[in-house]
Image 1: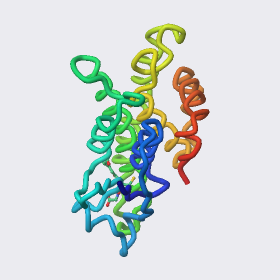
Image 2: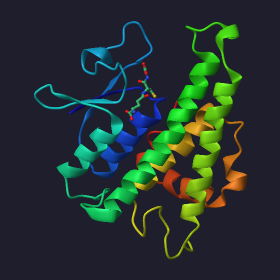
Image 3: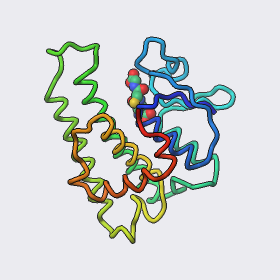
Image 4: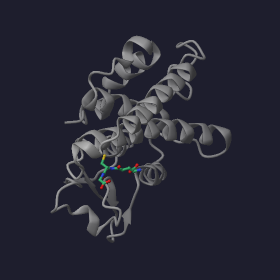
Length: 209
Ligand SMILES: N[C@@H](CCC(=O)N[C@@H](CS)C(=O)NCC(=O)O)C(=O)O
């Protein structure tokens, strides 16, 4: 398998962490989706990373489809429950963490995308996205703190799951792109989870840059 991706993308990082936790071999094909010479549009018509190219050349996107597929490839470290409410709950954690990222990406593009003049940028739009980031982090903190840490050390119970991986990648990317957001002070449960995840080699080896 080949993974087309960039080292800054939190969605790519989510896939790389899953590959590492599942102990799956792959080849990394670095690509900048914003460059005029990007390779990824040849595989993903949306021009976005991550894109997983399987043996045989078939391509998978987006990150949620890829991680769901990867989890089926090996029984090692099951990250998504097979059925029912537990499965839906993990997928909802992922949707929330990815949604925080989507809002952050939109805010950054509104502020910095070179295709737009300064007078065309909307502060109201940026503020709306920041509202989603704050509300998303607050919801994660509430859910993570709903049970004492010795009862529920991870987002979805006593084992690492895709919930934690998605949340950890969202928090790491906020630190990378928005270091001015002090999410740790108001969200101590998230801070503890982030620090615990940072000790795993899957996270340590994929810090955004
Ligand atoms: N929902 C997608 C989001 C992927 C995404 O937005 N990737 C960004 C990099 S962080 C990208 O490739 N952007 C280029 C573009 O949108 O043209 C996923 O989960 O894979």
